[in-house]
Structures are given as C-alpha cells and as structure tokens.
Image (cartoon, rainbow, N blue to C red):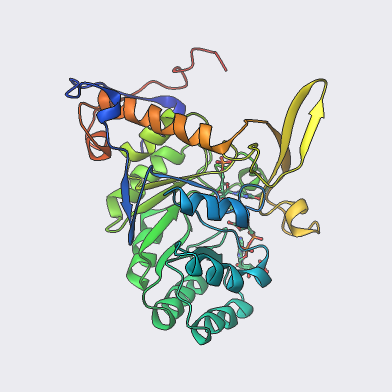
Length: 324
Ligand SMILES: NC(=O)C1=CN([C@@H]2O[C@H](COP(=O)(O)OP(=O)(O)OC[C@H]3O[C@@H](n4cnc5c(N)ncnc54)[C@H](OP(=O)(O)O)[C@@H]3O)[C@@H](O)[C@H]2O)C=CC1
Ligand SMILES: Nc1nc2c(ncn2[C@@H]2O[C@H](COP(=O)(O)O)[C@@H](O)[C@H]2O)c(=O)[nH]1
C-alpha cells in the first residue's frame, strides 16, 4: 500500500483558464446546503461554542456543534431554527443519546445535520445509532465517524449514513497513535485516498491539516469537506482561554478525549496545548478562501471539481525544505 501524508505531496499545475483568482468558485454543496468553502471547524469544545456556531451559520459556513454540553442541545436546535438558520449538532452512542433523539422528535425538531462523533466509528453501536436517527428523524443529514478504512466507509454508508468522516489519530491534540498503536497518523492523506475509492457518498477529511494548501490536497484525494481543529482554534471567537507568555499571546486547545475535557484521567487519548493567537476567525476563513481560489487556478479550472482531477507527485517529507 502506498502511504503518504500532506507534507509528502505536491499537486501539479495545469494551464490557467481564469482571468483572476476572484473568478474561482470555492463553494460546495454538502447535504441540503451550499457553503462558501469546504471547511468546517472541528466539533470540539476548544474550537466551537454556541455563539461561533450561530456566526458560522449566518455567514454561510458549515459548522458542527460539539456534544459536550448535552443539556443545551435541544434549546440550541430550537434557537437556530427559530432564527431561520440551519442546526448542526453532534451526538454520541450511549443510551442517553437515544433519549435525546426521542426528545428532538417529541419537540418536533429535526436538525438539518447530525454528526455521530465517536473515536472508533467502525462499530455496530454506531450503525445502530445511524439507523435509529434515520428512522426517527428522517430528514436529518447524518454524518458518521470517525473511520480509517474503506470497509468502515462502506458499512456506515450501507447503514444509512449520508456522509462519513475519515481520520483516526492524525489530530494535533491527539495521542491515540502513541497510546494505542492504531490510526492514520502519518498517512492520513493516503487513508483518505483509500476511503474515497470505496465511498459512494461525501467524505469529510478530519485531522492533520497544518497549512491552507492541505485543504486543496484533501479535496484532490476525495474530501467534500475538511474538518480542522488546531488551525481553527486560537481566534478571538474560540472558546479557549487566552494566555500571555513572554509577550506572546496564545489560546488553549484541548482534545475531546483529554483529561481537560473528560474531567478525569480515564481512557485519555488527547492532550491540552497552546496555539498562537490568530485574531479574528473571519480573517482566517477569508485567507483559506483566497488560497483555495489560487489552488483552483493552479488546477486549471473554475471550481473545486477541477482540483479532484489534477496529477500529483510524492516528494517524501521534502516540500517544506526543512523550513517550519
Ligand atoms: N478522531 C480521532 O482520532 C479521535 C477522536 N476522539 C474524540 O474524543 C471524544 C471522546 O472519545 P472517547 O472518550 O474515546 O470515546 P467516546 O466518548 O466517543 O465513546 C464512545 C463509546 O464507544 C465505546 N468504545 C469502545 N471502544 C472504544 C474506543 N476504542 N474508543 C472510544 N470509544 C470506544 C465507549 O465505551 P468506553 O468509554 O466504556 O470504552 C463509549 O461507550 C470524541 O469526540 C471523539 O471524536 C478521541 C480519540 C480519537
Ligand atoms: N486522538 C484524538 N483525536 C482528537 C481528540 N480531540 C479531537 N480529535 C480529533 O482531532 C481533529 C482535529 O485535528 P487537528 O489536527 O485539525 O487539530 C478533530 O476533528 C478530531 O477528529 C482527542 O482528544 N484525541
């Protein structure tokens, strides 16, 4: 099996057919809606909260609210839909989550998007939850994950998932690969490529994005959407605390399976760290869009579809030439 990661790949330019990068269309149809760019902040408590979710929905960006304040979720869906915005939430697979799906049904609330967010998504318990949501809330678009293999993508799709999320262990705050020996850490892009060969429905690439160019590479290897944690944390709008050290400003970023999130050292597979303060999230999203427009122009097209067809070379660990 050919393995490679984001830093090992360069996409090969094709003749440019647009007059300006502004003419490149970065929009993506994902489920029932079209979004400005194929990027979604990770559904982690250190990356998104209710107010950022509302801002994202208002500005035509996809978001997935995390599942770590379960008592607020029903009100959140109600609030978003009352404002005429789409609701996109996360659930787990424990017994209480079935009750929550029933509560949504009883309140006549069907979120536009529901993400089943489990560390090891290739599981009969995830399949059972997919089936339960599709049966109870049939108009919700169900995203299931996380997975690492084509077999998992096929099984979750066959169970009714409308999209699957690929990435076990490539995250910046992740220690799964060190603690368990498993995952796609170090070969996330190749895992995405393998999964995309099996997928019949959209894929979300999740974890390991370190540069804006990695978004285009994810699209090239099969992603419809790219989930980003560490690069999306650190903004004014991010939930983490601001910390100053020797004149430099940082924000806290912690894994969903970290002791910080869990409140106990049980099955910990994540850590807390500091990321540089990055100012406003709008500026970061604008830069991602501009860089993606450039990618489209290098791909020789007018939209994201053109990136999917470009040739590439594997240049093992060399694209940064030793730079950071
Ligand atoms: N994308 C990634 O690489 C990873 C992401 N995470 C994130 O961390 C959060 C919490 O994850 P975590 O506490 O590990 O699990 P979850 O809270 O996601 O647990 C889901 C359920 O699956 C059971 N389970 C069985 N085997 C596993 C396994 N290998 N890993 C996880 N659950 C298992 C758990 O039971 P029990 O707890 O009794 O085992 C629990 O009932 C989630 O948001 C998840 O997305 C965590 C690790 C990796
Ligand atoms: N192994 C773990 N993975 C985690 C944890 N919390 C979140 N995640 C995953 O990481 C991505 C974000 O990755 P990044 O490289 O962009 O920072 C996120 O979407 C989850 O899939 C964790 O505690 N352990």
